[in-house]
Image (cartoon, rainbow, N blue to C red; front, side):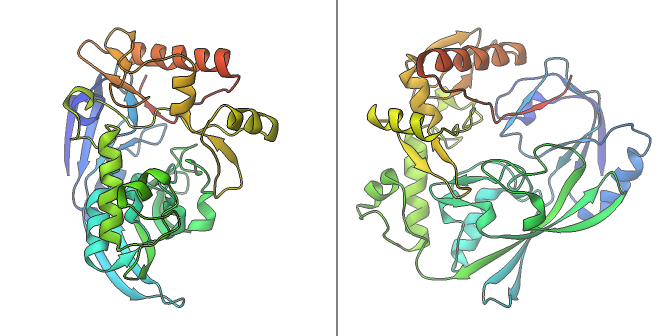
Length: 344
Protein backbone atom coordinates (compact mmCIF):
# COMPACT_ATOMS: atom_id res chain seq x y z
CA UNK A 1 0.00 0.00 0.00
CA UNK A 2 1.40 3.35 -1.07
CA UNK A 3 1.16 6.31 1.33
CA UNK A 4 1.96 9.86 0.19
CA UNK A 5 1.95 13.18 2.03
CA UNK A 6 0.71 16.62 0.99
CA UNK A 7 -0.96 15.17 -2.11
CA UNK A 8 -3.30 17.52 -4.06
CA UNK A 9 -6.84 16.09 -3.95
CA UNK A 10 -8.32 18.25 -6.72
CA UNK A 11 -7.04 15.97 -9.55
CA UNK A 12 -8.68 13.00 -7.80
CA UNK A 13 -12.16 14.52 -8.05
CA UNK A 14 -14.40 15.20 -11.03
CA UNK A 15 -14.87 18.84 -9.95
CA UNK A 16 -11.11 19.42 -9.83
CA UNK A 17 -11.40 21.61 -6.76
CA UNK A 18 -9.73 21.49 -3.36
CA UNK A 19 -6.51 21.49 -1.40
CA UNK A 20 -4.11 18.70 -0.40
CA UNK A 21 -4.45 15.68 1.85
CA UNK A 22 -2.12 15.60 4.83
CA UNK A 23 -1.69 11.91 3.97
CA UNK A 24 -3.15 9.78 1.21
CA UNK A 25 -3.10 5.96 1.17
CA UNK A 26 -4.08 4.15 -2.03
CA UNK A 27 -5.52 0.69 -1.50
CA UNK A 28 -5.31 -1.63 -4.53
CA UNK A 29 -4.97 -4.97 -2.73
CA UNK A 30 -7.76 -5.79 -0.22
CA UNK A 31 -5.26 -7.84 1.80
CA UNK A 32 -3.37 -4.63 2.66
CA UNK A 33 -6.31 -2.96 4.39
CA UNK A 34 -5.10 -4.09 7.87
CA UNK A 35 -1.86 -2.19 7.14
CA UNK A 36 -3.88 0.98 6.69
CA UNK A 37 -5.74 0.34 9.94
CA UNK A 38 -2.38 0.19 11.71
CA UNK A 39 -1.20 3.33 9.89
CA UNK A 40 -4.06 5.41 11.32
CA UNK A 41 -4.50 3.70 14.69
CA UNK A 42 -3.49 6.82 16.61
CA UNK A 43 -5.92 9.16 14.83
CA UNK A 44 -8.75 10.61 16.90
CA UNK A 45 -11.33 10.32 14.10
CA UNK A 46 -12.04 7.82 11.30
CA UNK A 47 -10.28 8.49 7.98
CA UNK A 48 -11.91 10.05 4.95
CA UNK A 49 -12.64 7.57 2.16
CA UNK A 50 -12.39 8.53 -1.50
CA UNK A 51 -13.26 6.49 -4.57
CA UNK A 52 -13.35 8.19 -7.96
CA UNK A 53 -14.28 11.55 -6.42
CA UNK A 54 -17.46 11.96 -8.46
CA UNK A 55 -19.71 13.26 -5.68
CA UNK A 56 -17.32 15.22 -3.47
CA UNK A 57 -16.24 18.79 -2.88
CA UNK A 58 -12.85 19.11 -1.17
CA UNK A 59 -12.22 22.19 0.96
CA UNK A 60 -9.74 24.77 -0.31
CA UNK A 61 -7.40 24.09 2.61
CA UNK A 62 -7.50 20.36 1.99
CA UNK A 63 -7.97 17.62 4.54
CA UNK A 64 -6.03 17.16 7.77
CA UNK A 65 -7.44 13.67 8.41
CA UNK A 66 -5.89 10.67 6.63
CA UNK A 67 -7.51 9.98 3.26
CA UNK A 68 -7.97 6.43 1.97
CA UNK A 69 -8.42 6.12 -1.78
CA UNK A 70 -10.09 2.77 -2.39
CA UNK A 71 -9.03 1.35 -5.76
CA UNK A 72 -9.65 -2.36 -5.18
CA UNK A 73 -11.14 -4.22 -8.14
CA UNK A 74 -12.80 -7.54 -8.70
CA UNK A 75 -16.13 -9.22 -9.46
CA UNK A 76 -17.03 -12.80 -8.47
CA UNK A 77 -20.23 -14.59 -9.52
CA UNK A 78 -20.93 -16.85 -6.55
CA UNK A 79 -23.99 -18.80 -7.68
CA UNK A 80 -27.70 -18.85 -6.92
CA UNK A 81 -29.33 -17.73 -3.67
CA UNK A 82 -32.37 -19.40 -2.09
CA UNK A 83 -34.71 -17.16 -4.08
CA UNK A 84 -33.07 -18.12 -7.39
CA UNK A 85 -31.24 -14.83 -7.84
CA UNK A 86 -27.55 -14.87 -8.71
CA UNK A 87 -25.18 -13.61 -6.04
CA UNK A 88 -22.32 -11.36 -7.20
CA UNK A 89 -19.52 -10.17 -4.92
CA UNK A 90 -17.81 -6.90 -5.85
CA UNK A 91 -14.78 -5.11 -4.42
CA UNK A 92 -15.57 -1.60 -3.19
CA UNK A 93 -13.17 0.14 -5.57
CA UNK A 94 -14.55 -1.46 -8.73
CA UNK A 95 -15.99 1.21 -11.07
CA UNK A 96 -19.77 1.07 -11.15
CA UNK A 97 -19.99 1.48 -14.91
CA UNK A 98 -17.71 -1.55 -15.39
CA UNK A 99 -19.87 -3.60 -13.02
CA UNK A 100 -23.00 -2.73 -14.99
CA UNK A 101 -21.33 -3.76 -18.25
CA UNK A 102 -20.14 -7.05 -16.73
CA UNK A 103 -23.57 -7.91 -15.35
CA UNK A 104 -25.21 -7.28 -18.72
CA UNK A 105 -22.61 -9.49 -20.42
CA UNK A 106 -23.37 -12.22 -17.85
CA UNK A 107 -27.09 -12.04 -18.63
CA UNK A 108 -27.95 -10.56 -15.23
CA UNK A 109 -30.63 -7.88 -14.92
CA UNK A 110 -31.37 -5.40 -12.17
CA UNK A 111 -28.74 -2.66 -12.53
CA UNK A 112 -28.89 -1.82 -16.24
CA UNK A 113 -30.56 1.56 -15.60
CA UNK A 114 -27.45 2.62 -13.64
CA UNK A 115 -25.36 2.66 -16.82
CA UNK A 116 -23.06 5.67 -17.14
CA UNK A 117 -23.06 6.66 -13.47
CA UNK A 118 -19.48 7.47 -12.43
CA UNK A 119 -17.89 6.43 -9.18
CA UNK A 120 -17.02 3.22 -7.40
CA UNK A 121 -19.36 0.40 -6.45
CA UNK A 122 -18.44 0.89 -2.79
CA UNK A 123 -19.93 4.39 -2.90
CA UNK A 124 -23.31 3.18 -4.16
CA UNK A 125 -24.90 2.22 -0.82
CA UNK A 126 -23.70 5.45 0.79
CA UNK A 127 -26.42 7.42 -0.95
CA UNK A 128 -28.38 4.49 -2.34
CA UNK A 129 -27.42 5.41 -5.89
CA UNK A 130 -30.31 5.23 -8.32
CA UNK A 131 -31.47 6.36 -11.74
CA UNK A 132 -34.36 5.82 -14.15
CA UNK A 133 -36.38 3.59 -11.87
CA UNK A 134 -33.66 1.44 -10.28
CA UNK A 135 -31.84 1.88 -6.99
CA UNK A 136 -28.97 -0.02 -5.40
CA UNK A 137 -31.39 -1.05 -2.64
CA UNK A 138 -33.24 -3.16 -5.25
CA UNK A 139 -30.32 -5.57 -5.61
CA UNK A 140 -27.98 -5.08 -2.63
CA UNK A 141 -27.94 -8.14 -0.35
CA UNK A 142 -25.18 -7.22 2.13
CA UNK A 143 -21.96 -5.26 2.62
CA UNK A 144 -18.74 -6.08 4.43
CA UNK A 145 -17.44 -3.00 6.22
CA UNK A 146 -14.72 -2.00 8.63
CA UNK A 147 -16.33 -0.61 11.77
CA UNK A 148 -13.93 2.02 13.15
CA UNK A 149 -15.83 2.19 16.43
CA UNK A 150 -15.65 -1.57 17.08
CA UNK A 151 -12.28 -1.96 15.37
CA UNK A 152 -13.26 -5.00 13.30
CA UNK A 153 -14.90 -6.23 10.10
CA UNK A 154 -18.67 -6.47 10.16
CA UNK A 155 -21.16 -7.85 7.62
CA UNK A 156 -24.37 -5.84 7.38
CA UNK A 157 -27.55 -6.95 5.64
CA UNK A 158 -29.01 -4.38 3.26
CA UNK A 159 -31.89 -3.83 5.69
CA UNK A 160 -29.40 -2.74 8.37
CA UNK A 161 -27.95 -0.04 6.12
CA UNK A 162 -31.04 2.22 6.42
CA UNK A 163 -31.18 2.78 2.66
CA UNK A 164 -33.54 5.57 1.64
CA UNK A 165 -33.83 8.16 -1.13
CA UNK A 166 -30.17 9.06 -1.78
CA UNK A 167 -29.26 8.29 1.80
CA UNK A 168 -28.17 5.58 4.22
CA UNK A 169 -26.54 5.31 7.61
CA UNK A 170 -23.18 5.57 5.79
CA UNK A 171 -24.12 9.02 4.45
CA UNK A 172 -24.44 10.37 7.97
CA UNK A 173 -21.27 8.96 9.54
CA UNK A 174 -17.68 7.96 8.75
CA UNK A 175 -17.87 5.12 11.27
CA UNK A 176 -17.86 2.49 8.51
CA UNK A 177 -15.63 1.89 5.46
CA UNK A 178 -17.21 -0.29 2.78
CA UNK A 179 -14.87 -3.10 1.66
CA UNK A 180 -16.97 -5.54 -0.39
CA UNK A 181 -20.58 -5.73 -1.55
CA UNK A 182 -22.91 -8.62 -2.33
CA UNK A 183 -25.66 -8.16 -4.91
CA UNK A 184 -28.51 -10.48 -5.91
CA UNK A 185 -29.60 -10.20 -9.56
CA UNK A 186 -32.06 -11.88 -11.89
CA UNK A 187 -30.85 -14.00 -14.75
CA UNK A 188 -33.13 -12.62 -17.44
CA UNK A 189 -33.32 -11.70 -21.10
CA UNK A 190 -35.35 -8.55 -20.40
CA UNK A 191 -34.70 -5.47 -18.28
CA UNK A 192 -36.90 -4.14 -15.56
CA UNK A 193 -39.87 -2.06 -16.76
CA UNK A 194 -38.97 1.23 -18.45
CA UNK A 195 -40.66 3.80 -16.23
CA UNK A 196 -39.10 7.08 -17.42
CA UNK A 197 -40.53 8.83 -20.47
CA UNK A 198 -37.13 9.99 -21.77
CA UNK A 199 -35.77 6.43 -21.80
CA UNK A 200 -38.96 5.04 -23.34
CA UNK A 201 -38.82 7.69 -26.08
CA UNK A 202 -35.17 6.84 -26.78
CA UNK A 203 -36.15 3.17 -27.15
CA UNK A 204 -39.36 4.06 -29.03
CA UNK A 205 -41.42 1.83 -26.75
CA UNK A 206 -44.42 2.46 -24.46
CA UNK A 207 -43.85 3.14 -20.76
CA UNK A 208 -43.70 -0.10 -18.81
CA UNK A 209 -42.05 -2.02 -21.65
CA UNK A 210 -39.19 -4.43 -21.00
CA UNK A 211 -36.31 -4.69 -23.42
CA UNK A 212 -32.96 -6.52 -23.47
CA UNK A 213 -30.78 -5.08 -20.67
CA UNK A 214 -28.09 -4.00 -23.13
CA UNK A 215 -30.64 -1.93 -25.08
CA UNK A 216 -31.95 -0.35 -21.88
CA UNK A 217 -28.41 0.57 -20.84
CA UNK A 218 -27.65 2.14 -24.22
CA UNK A 219 -30.84 4.20 -24.06
CA UNK A 220 -29.98 5.42 -20.57
CA UNK A 221 -26.49 6.36 -21.74
CA UNK A 222 -27.94 8.34 -24.65
CA UNK A 223 -30.27 10.26 -22.33
CA UNK A 224 -27.49 10.92 -19.83
CA UNK A 225 -25.11 12.14 -22.57
CA UNK A 226 -27.64 14.67 -23.82
CA UNK A 227 -27.75 16.11 -20.32
CA UNK A 228 -23.98 16.12 -19.91
CA UNK A 229 -24.29 13.48 -17.19
CA UNK A 230 -21.67 11.14 -18.66
CA UNK A 231 -18.22 12.42 -17.76
CA UNK A 232 -16.74 12.16 -21.26
CA UNK A 233 -19.84 13.46 -23.05
CA UNK A 234 -19.34 17.22 -22.91
CA UNK A 235 -15.91 18.85 -22.82
CA UNK A 236 -17.26 22.24 -21.73
CA UNK A 237 -19.13 20.76 -18.77
CA UNK A 238 -16.91 17.84 -17.79
CA UNK A 239 -16.06 19.26 -14.31
CA UNK A 240 -19.29 18.17 -12.72
CA UNK A 241 -20.63 16.01 -9.91
CA UNK A 242 -23.91 15.25 -11.65
CA UNK A 243 -26.85 16.05 -9.41
CA UNK A 244 -25.85 18.73 -6.92
CA UNK A 245 -29.26 18.72 -5.20
CA UNK A 246 -31.66 16.02 -4.06
CA UNK A 247 -35.07 15.92 -5.67
CA UNK A 248 -36.89 17.49 -2.70
CA UNK A 249 -39.85 15.90 -0.99
CA UNK A 250 -43.10 17.88 -1.16
CA UNK A 251 -46.43 17.55 0.60
CA UNK A 252 -49.75 16.99 -1.18
CA UNK A 253 -50.78 20.68 -1.47
CA UNK A 254 -47.39 21.69 -2.92
CA UNK A 255 -47.34 18.61 -5.19
CA UNK A 256 -50.74 19.59 -6.60
CA UNK A 257 -49.61 23.18 -7.14
CA UNK A 258 -46.42 22.06 -8.90
CA UNK A 259 -48.28 19.61 -11.14
CA UNK A 260 -50.55 22.46 -12.26
CA UNK A 261 -47.37 24.30 -13.33
CA UNK A 262 -46.21 21.29 -15.34
CA UNK A 263 -43.58 20.10 -12.88
CA UNK A 264 -42.37 16.48 -13.02
CA UNK A 265 -43.69 15.28 -9.65
CA UNK A 266 -43.37 11.57 -8.95
CA UNK A 267 -43.80 8.98 -6.23
CA UNK A 268 -40.56 7.31 -5.13
CA UNK A 269 -39.92 3.80 -3.75
CA UNK A 270 -39.49 5.12 -0.20
CA UNK A 271 -43.11 6.38 -0.28
CA UNK A 272 -42.19 10.03 -0.71
CA UNK A 273 -43.48 12.45 -3.34
CA UNK A 274 -40.70 14.49 -4.95
CA UNK A 275 -40.15 17.09 -7.65
CA UNK A 276 -37.12 17.17 -9.91
CA UNK A 277 -34.48 19.65 -8.71
CA UNK A 278 -33.49 20.63 -12.26
CA UNK A 279 -37.06 21.74 -13.02
CA UNK A 280 -37.09 23.89 -9.90
CA UNK A 281 -33.79 25.50 -10.86
CA UNK A 282 -35.12 26.40 -14.31
CA UNK A 283 -38.44 27.59 -12.84
CA UNK A 284 -36.52 29.86 -10.47
CA UNK A 285 -35.18 31.81 -13.44
CA UNK A 286 -31.73 30.33 -14.00
CA UNK A 287 -30.72 29.90 -17.62
CA UNK A 288 -28.27 27.37 -18.98
CA UNK A 289 -24.66 28.58 -18.81
CA UNK A 290 -25.48 31.26 -16.21
CA UNK A 291 -22.41 32.36 -14.24
CA UNK A 292 -22.98 32.14 -10.48
CA UNK A 293 -19.59 32.80 -8.87
CA UNK A 294 -16.03 32.95 -10.18
CA UNK A 295 -15.45 29.70 -12.06
CA UNK A 296 -18.86 28.19 -11.21
CA UNK A 297 -21.93 28.25 -13.46
CA UNK A 298 -25.03 26.40 -14.54
CA UNK A 299 -24.14 23.71 -17.08
CA UNK A 300 -24.69 24.53 -20.76
CA UNK A 301 -26.80 21.38 -21.26
CA UNK A 302 -28.51 20.64 -17.94
CA UNK A 303 -29.69 22.48 -14.83
CA UNK A 304 -26.85 21.54 -12.52
CA UNK A 305 -23.61 23.23 -11.43
CA UNK A 306 -20.22 22.81 -13.11
CA UNK A 307 -16.75 24.22 -12.49
CA UNK A 308 -14.37 26.07 -14.78
CA UNK A 309 -10.87 27.50 -14.34
CA UNK A 310 -10.67 29.71 -11.28
CA UNK A 311 -13.27 27.77 -9.30
CA UNK A 312 -12.77 27.27 -5.57
CA UNK A 313 -14.55 25.23 -2.93
CA UNK A 314 -15.72 28.43 -1.24
CA UNK A 315 -17.05 29.71 -4.56
CA UNK A 316 -18.83 26.45 -5.27
CA UNK A 317 -20.47 26.51 -1.83
CA UNK A 318 -21.54 30.10 -2.47
CA UNK A 319 -23.02 29.10 -5.84
CA UNK A 320 -24.96 26.30 -4.15
CA UNK A 321 -26.37 28.83 -1.67
CA UNK A 322 -27.33 31.25 -4.46
CA UNK A 323 -29.34 28.55 -6.23
CA UNK A 324 -30.87 27.31 -2.98
CA UNK A 325 -32.07 30.77 -1.92
CA UNK A 326 -33.48 31.75 -5.33
CA UNK A 327 -35.32 28.45 -5.74
CA UNK A 328 -36.87 28.88 -2.30
CA UNK A 329 -37.85 32.51 -3.04
CA UNK A 330 -39.36 31.77 -6.45
CA UNK A 331 -40.97 28.34 -5.89
CA UNK A 332 -41.39 27.92 -2.15
CA UNK A 333 -39.45 24.63 -2.23
CA UNK A 334 -36.27 24.16 -0.23
CA UNK A 335 -33.46 22.27 -2.00
CA UNK A 336 -30.76 20.33 -0.15
CA UNK A 337 -27.30 19.52 -1.51
CA UNK A 338 -26.38 15.85 -1.92
CA UNK A 339 -22.64 16.57 -2.23
CA UNK A 340 -20.20 14.96 0.19
CA UNK A 341 -18.07 17.74 1.67
CA UNK A 342 -14.51 16.72 2.52
CA UNK A 343 -11.84 18.53 4.48
CA UNK A 344 -11.41 21.64 6.56
